[in-house]
Each structure stands twice: as structure tokens, then as C-alpha cells.
Amino acid sequence: MDRELMARRIGAAFVSSAVAISLAIVFATPALASPMVYTAKFVTNIKIGHHSYNNASVTIVFRGDTADIANAESGGMALASSECTDNGGVGYFKYLTKGAATIIAHSAGVTIKAKLKPGQVFVALDSCNGGIGFGSFVTGGLEVAYPVGFTLGTAMSGAVQNDLTIPVSMSGAVYSCIGYPPDSVGNLPGNNGMCTPPDAYPLFSDNGNVYVYQPYTFQPYISNHGGSMNRGTFSIAPDVERDE
Image 1 (cartoon, one colour):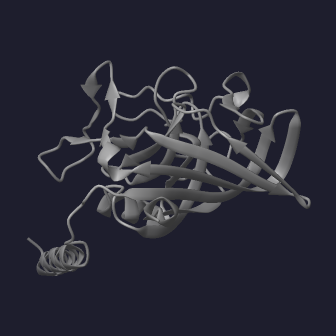
Image 2: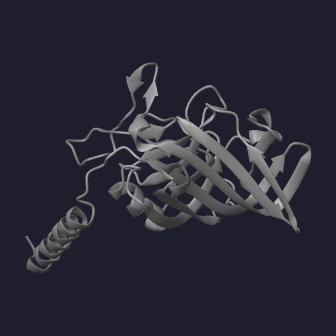
């Protein structure tokens, strides 16, 4: 083996080991069940009730408990990810389906708030591929990146290092994508590099139907991780309101 190549590999392995050790030290606290609040912030076009808002500042808040985090299931079977290599090539997508979700939109001096009806939205985590955000059941199946999913940036590294129980703030590329991933990968067929428009798939709220759009994209997408031109933040924090 080329000595320079070997040196680079040894150096990379050393860095990976050092990071793993440091993470073990930082996050070596018991994952006790506790109330948490999950928050996404981004700018997009959104429709709530009969009103549409372009370039709105959108905040989605989900309050739940870490005791309810579970492996995501389809047809009663846990969904495995063949992309995950940390435990022999099979990992599992996780989600938190039990909780209360609220969407708040600010646009042109107007603020509108919509409390989503229970059972529609979940906190989504793919620690194998580095994705995190809010998914939904709007199509009858799992939509892992709608109303919003994050990847790339610190969102990707944060998703890999987190299990939805660790307080953290991260940022990354924003997808509001029904039919994610847009391009085929593994046994997922993709959607010809596109996302399905949300107009036929409302989220139901106390303020009318909610539709979240994705206007800032390459069309068609150039890749599952590089097609969105939008950015946003996602955070996990203790729910102090419920703790009081």
C-alpha cells in the first residue's frame, strides 16, 4: 500500500476514534424519559386555511416525551436502513409519534398559528443517513421529510450522533418533500427526481388545512442531499413548561 495513502487512513482513523471518545464523554448521560420540545425554523411558502403566505418565517413545534421514541414501523415491522454500518449493516429509523404539534407562520407583519390535530406528524430520525425533522402520515404511509426534514450541515452530523433524547441545536438543508427521496436509492424507487405537490395532502388543524411548499429548489433535484437551496434550523430541548 502507498505509504502516503496509509498515513492518511491512519490519520482519519485516529480522528474518528478521538471524536467517538469525546462524544462518549460529552453524551455519557442516561437517556432517561423526559419531556422534550422539538423545534424547526425555516422560510418557505405555506397555506393555512384560505390564506397563502409566500416567503413566510415558519416555526414548527412538537412537544413529546422521550419515553415514546420507538423504531419506525411499516406493516408492524421495524423499518431497517441498509445504509447504516454502525451495527453490522442494519440500523433502524426512529420516530416520536405521540405529542402535540403547532405551526406558526409570520409574513408581512401577520402571524398565524395552527394547532395540528393529533396523530398526523411525528419527529423523524434517520441516524444512518443523517436526516432529522418532522414527518407525517399524510399519504397513508410514512413521509419522512414532510412537513420538513433536514440534512447536510450540522443537521447531518447531529442526526448521526443523536437519538432524539440529547439537547442540541443544528442547521442544514431543508426539504418539505412528499415522496422523499426524490431519486432512487437502495430498494426505494424515488420519484423521478421530484417531490409530490402537497395540495392533495392536507395537514388538519384548528385553523384550517395546512400545506407546506418547497419553492427554493433545483428542478429536478440533483441529488437526495443536494437538491434544496433552502436552509433552516432544528433543535431539541427540555420542555421546561411541562417540567414545572
